Image 1 (tube, rainbow, N blue to C red):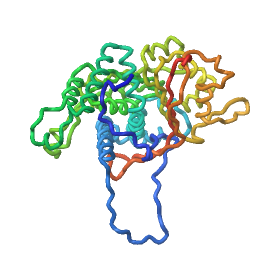
Image 2 (cartoon, rainbow, N blue to C red; image 1 turned 90 degrees about the horizontal axis):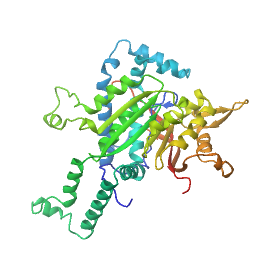
Image 3 (cartoon, rainbow, N blue to C red; image 1 turned 120 degrees about the vertical axis):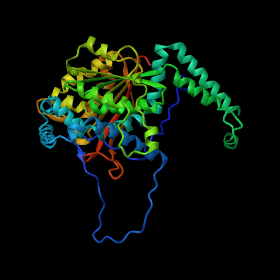
Image 4 (cartoon, one colour; image 1 turned 90 degrees about the vertical axis):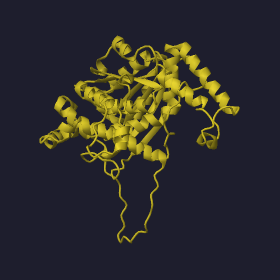
Amino acid sequence: MGKKAFRSNRRPSITSRPPAPSAAATASSSSEKATTANPKPEAATTTTTTPAEAEELRSHQRLLHIFASTFDPVLSSPGFNTSLQQVKQALFNRDFGAAFGKEQFLEVYAARWSPPRALCYSRVLEQISEAYLEPLVRLTKAESDPESAIADEEEEEEIDDEVEHGRVSPTLDQERQGQVSPTLDQERQGQRRSSPAATLRMLAIGGGAAEIVAFGNYIHGADGAVAGDLTLLDTGPWGEVVRKLQAGLTATPVLSKYASVAARAANAPLIEPATRLHSSFVRQDVLALDREALSGLLGQTPLLVTLLFTLNELYTTGGVGKTTSFLRLLTSTIPHGSLLLVVDSPGSYSEAAVGKEAKKYPMQWLLDHTLIPTDNRKEEMEGCKWEKLESHDSVWFRLDDKKLRYPIELQDSRYQMHLYRAVPRSS
């Protein structure tokens, strides 16, 4: 596909700025502070916030507001701290059944740990958007509606031709003087926003509160050009939490009675119209799915599959054998062109024991060993083959706690990230 079928209002990837890991219960870390033995008075310094950073702060604050509003009864409950300590203890003991088995605990978890994870996932999706997610949307649209995709591509080529030959984008002075009508690009952008949107599908394995908010934020950033279809699959009863956050993403935020006239005028749902985001929750153990069930969840068109702070848990609780079998089943059933995004705790936090001697292997090594086999094991694999697009062993996600507001403290964290694409085995 040559040209983009839609234009996103996203900022470019920020790879020079350290992203932070989601607030993992087992791998959270406090902010690092440099100190000196004899501090001297510092000269007044001015920190400059770039437009991109300012926009990300506004986006992060809006997502935090959705969490705070949705779980206000939980955060303000007299028993919140008691329940929080119980969840913490269960997570420390790696008793995930206890931590995620009760709806009450899930709401506490969603109010405490999901907000920073959602912000982290939002940044990860944003960083892979231009290079990988936008092409995925175009590929999906091309397979589901070839005529529309061709028309979009021809339209983009025509706009680019107009710009290249100087027939579009009049000078700023002319625009200010009102001597020209809106540009062809602007007119067609408006037509595209009013036309049926392309759809990005996502299957979040082990997904819950953080995934739906991050995915909703991505759909919001697509500026009307993309709709989202999200399926979340987990063994815990996340259904009601997901329903509440879906409502929060598509409802007009409640403002303070002291909000300014301008704030009230600009107040609108994150997702508008609400039909732009469809979500469903499936309560199932992914390691227990057979080929037919997994194929039904994946569908026939390319999609984004995520394992966000989930894969190491599968290796740890389900075992290396079952998890490897699942990854091979995914390989044999996933539509070509799909993406697999894995985010998890870095380093020794993500290791799994193998064999009678319980020798530990890094999660990343086990993942690559399964998805990208050596030459003498390639004949064992069915379905697609995987190409590794990006890989980061340890990335920081730091929150600006001086500028972001939330009822309780949010923590920085670190993560590893790996992105794969499924391609035909013959390619």
